Length: 529
Image 1 (cartoon, one colour):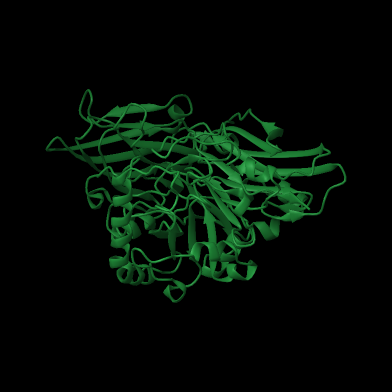
Image 2 (cartoon, rainbow, N blue to C red):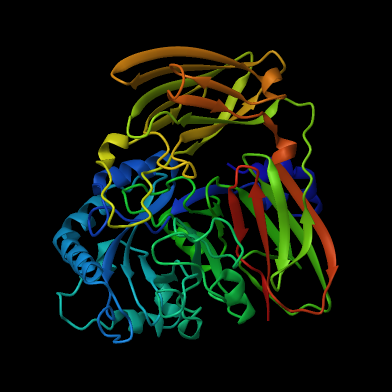
């Protein structure tokens, strides 16, 4: 998929980059998440299957070690937390051979796994160590009580180390000393990318959404994307779910977007090393940022007082805002995204609601009459867990299946009501459609709910979806329901900001964008040195 090239051919040709850029496709990954191989829940096999529904590349991460967990006398850690982590590390040691075998076996054309392991640290903040190659580079966990200085050695390495390992800080926004990042120990030579979006929240800035609501606490001061840039660090940004229930790519928690001509291990690795990445919360929103002929992730020569900006965004829902940021300030922005008379764009489908703790098993087919479904994106979630000590239901029962044969989208998914009035646990997708005022989307559903099989068939006319969204209940009040969003034309979902800005600052520049559904994306920065 390359919707930027599709929607901005003229503008890219004027920049002289259309031929090169149109040969690229966008790919979606999650390089940091967990399952029951350490602490966390769900089988590794289920995590791999979940990843295949929505991702092109991924990793399942083992909780590897916490060298200074009991070394800091000033830090009060509840005994049950210490016990929980020690048991998780021991579990990983037992599962290590099986982890290496299953991850190695799941690689296929167009689906690339990476090994990874995680260090906790009060001193440095938490780091995910991503391995380029197969298990030949993967170290073994140490036994309990053995000294482990390998994180320190990795963070003191040089650029050559990135041929094998990327040391990626994550949930950086927590307070320094409380497993948030310590910028004084940050080494951009070994950490080309930093994770700023995950199920912990968004650490783009102190005010960013989603908020930090995990048991580990709130965001703190300069431990953000903007904070790192203000200290003149240069790094790319990624999003990963950090999900703990065998659900890589769980919608709304974090994803990484890269552009490549083809997907393979070497190309993905090179894109991460080059910082040619963007961090998204949910929808794989495509971005292209060019400043003074450099692209997002690059280091450009110092400018002479002017920066020439071309920022492109192609989303999957109506855009709310697109902004160019320097020194934490908005230096250019677009906030008005009007539709047109076309019947080409995106329709959102959400399935779920109903009573909590009463599962609905959905089998859904979506097809177009007098029109065409061009493509789709999944919006499938794993079971959310804010407190890692929570024990969810068996995640194997919730494994979704999603496919598209060029005409019909087929979805199998389990929903279980929203756990709170502020927590969205619905499942869904967005259809890219092309048609006319007579086009209909036919939605056939079979739902097992309340010990009853319910069959329904709904017709949604594009002409009506241009005017209002629609809702259907499966079996009366407080039964599971379907929400069908407005038809959002491509014009509403796309943006091009072209500006020449006079500025004395040599501060890094990046782009951020939000959709109306709350999904966001942040490009890596362009720094001037």
